[in-house]
Image (cartoon, rainbow, N blue to C red; front, side, top):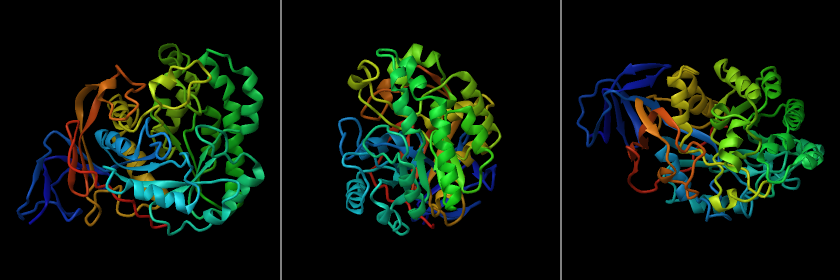
Length: 436
């Protein structure tokens, strides 16, 4: 007896859409193709597109520390509401996840509280290189997070010698928040109180490319893997496209959807994030990277803050915006607009995360793989509304945006966790397993 059959949908198998039946047993893909076995449950996916479970490789769920803003439970609800079946979660919490004791505490906090599957980054500091050298077999650890420039929280490794130590001792992919701390401090004089338009002037494109050049130089010197997060500048696109191999990079949906100065005119500090939303010349170059497959992943950088804090006068307003629930609707809308292909999107949110980080049995619809699926209606039109945001912050920078293309079912280990926006079942997410 099978647990579930998905039939009549267009399924993304072997790099193309095929109308095949998928049968599921014991949380795994049992068979692809016609099945004569009986099943406890059947999904008729007629008119729908069945994708591998989509992975968001950059989220901040704020636990421990700021659980009034978000926690592992609420963040995971937002994930499955948006068709995301697994997340990588960041270590800049309070206290930071930068030793094995705190890492284990986070695993304990996640157990039976997260709807989606999960992995956590181990935070790099100037003093924890012994731990960084011994992460190969740490359960649920996706990689090392390095803040080369200061952002939310107090994890910062700004000195070049310390950055070298992190890479020299790294036993996992090092994911980098790449801004140059020295330039950030020098540029503070350019901050205009009460004017968020000065945010990309303070956190300038020079600040980003200077740091990224340094990171790549160090990673290549030690032959280590670096994954540069939320790339925002045309200079970085041109530079990174010449340095592939061990160097990979991410772009966020918001940097592909809004740009300065319009976003600051309309959203004020709600458009404030690090590194910042920049002008259209940078936006155009980011799209050039996406269309030509220079970038490797699209992650949301889900970084919620309460409205009461976002409403503070700039620069006292915190940087960051929610995004795990809107990543797929935003990007599916771009697919419908012809800005990228569905194949490319699946590379960025399914296949490449698996290849870069070595996730086991995810990212593909293959026999024997985990039965995680993001089922989307490419023709469904939706409007993003703050009241429908599952995150505790209760808002989205895309409030009022109308999108075409939307996840309608989230399936994890063969169980339906979201159907038509409604979250179902219990939080049964488990840590991701890594092969390297």
